Image (cartoon, rainbow, N blue to C red; front, side, top):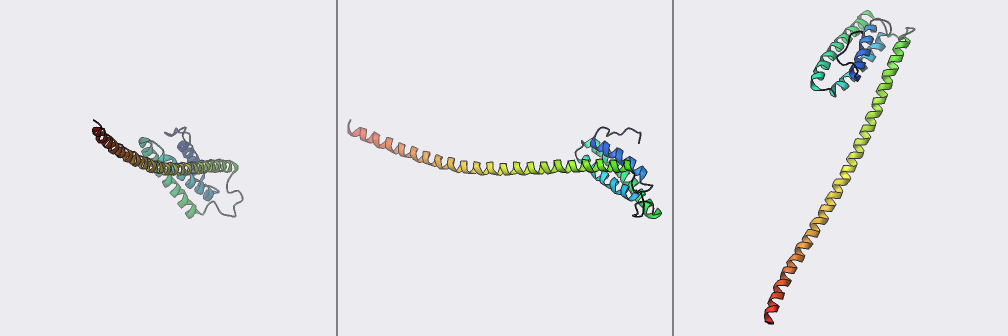
Length: 172
């Protein structure tokens, strides 16, 4: 579509642009494949929406609802008209659609890789945190034991000072 999106220049905006183009093509040959791709794009848009500021999130939710309605209409047309997506078709998706789908698939795989790395990082951080907490607990026990010994030594010093004071009185 030639209209400017409120989400221009964002991942959400890129998905939105692709979705608009795919929804237009969902009426012709290869519609079943295109509809599946549209569903994937809507899922990605929903994920992107979660990271948006509150005001943008509301606008994105409205946009997604509209696209979901359009997608349902395209699915209904496919089911009622029987057009597109059948195995007997010679060219279910043209090369520009294939390129776009490959680019989307590549982006999804890249995001999966990033997500996997983030999960690994969180697991490492969690493990390090557990080790630190364990070490702190051990240090606390050592400090408490040392404090108990210091208290005992102070009590012994007080007793020794008392005894020394009494002994000093014997010689005066």
